[in-house]
Image (tube, rainbow over all chains, first blue to last red; front, top):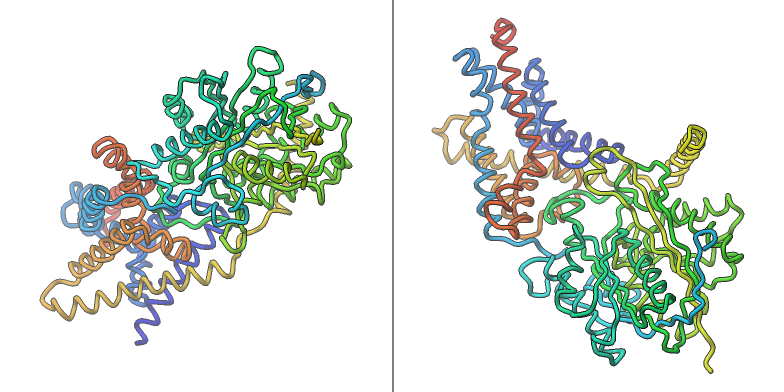
Length: 118
Length: 335
Length: 159
């Protein structure tokens, strides 16, 4: 039960930060996504992200920050194991499931569905 | 022409009007005044672009039916819309054999059409013209902003593009509402860069046009029963009043805005009201014209407003130039 | 336009922008932040629930793979909700609460794909799928390569 409270707190907090950015800078989704992605990459690279993840669990991995950290984590691991080639491929490999899923699903849904009247 | 203002010495009348809107607009406070309210804004077409074309085509036909005339009795159609290359109007006019002059001034296009139509009749070279504009929420949103299904949050300053068409038949045939003069707008840019704040970008253009209009006609705001801007929205209207007060003109009690009128801000969650090329034309041809015939308003100054930016100019961090055309309508007494 | 007019115009513009800043309605901070907090929290809790469920059902599978399945599940649900025309309402309510989780990324790709299917499969749908989310892919992959290069140069820091 306590875990879920932690998850809610951390996840909610990341979103609040995003909301503050939207309210004060009138940023659109694209910029917000990039900022949080890069934040995740940065936090993982300097070694801080693991603490946020151990406390927040899904509250830290579900946001796009988690996506960024997975990229960085994969890149680091892959480079240590495979050198230069690992540097290029391993980050992308770590998140390939998500990316492939999004592309394929967007393709299928795009073929089937129509925009609804607003 | 003095102070950008022209007087129509020939008597140019509104012979007939037609207006069509979609469901959301039909749920607003003006619902009973539009000729046609469409349930499904896709109109059974494959795309929203085709739906807008169908809506515009049908409204022009409705206008001619109401006036009991055939298309060969119309000398020219001046129309525009918000789609790239005004392709909506291009395809609409494919359905008619009437000479066509496509025009574009963003949401001020209706004003531009009325002025050009008036000048054509004034010159004696044309007798009867149609001025119309259309806009559609779904075609404007994807072109200027985002995919329809994107889960983004609307900002407090955002306006809702009206799905609607307004069309006016102008001629020298005696009628009750006469177009007596107009002030042609010029491009005004006070440096607003926020593409979300259309009201703030366009208010200065209205100010400059109003100043020219009052100087050129010798009139004051009190001359009119109603000074009606196109789509400044609620916040933009407030800014306009502040600007005009600095020039010693008080608009309180005389001014209203088509975008503010067409939606119920609270009930329909439309913070800043409606906008779009079809906003001023549908509100004027539906609501205002009927109110004038009912003698609620006898002297109306209509000022459609347009923000002359493009997606590219906004991305290149250019400021937003705007324009506003003022057209004066007078109710003549019954003979 | 001569220099003097330009200077006068700039002064007028600056004054006007100040006026706008003062008079234009601001974002409703508290209500939007609360909504973002709640929606974001719920989505993350749902992710946690899925993780726990998958760990229980597929207890032989490696934790990294479970995380991938959870991501895929959330993406699939977002895609379906977007296709049904429901997700944009969640987004309008939740704001950042629906953009920041991976749902935001998925929604931006799927919505762009649906929007452009009118222009055909290849040139419409496929060409425009990443109009909103493209930067995420570019920055993501570029950043990961940079991190890899940094690791190559300073492997000791990361061991």
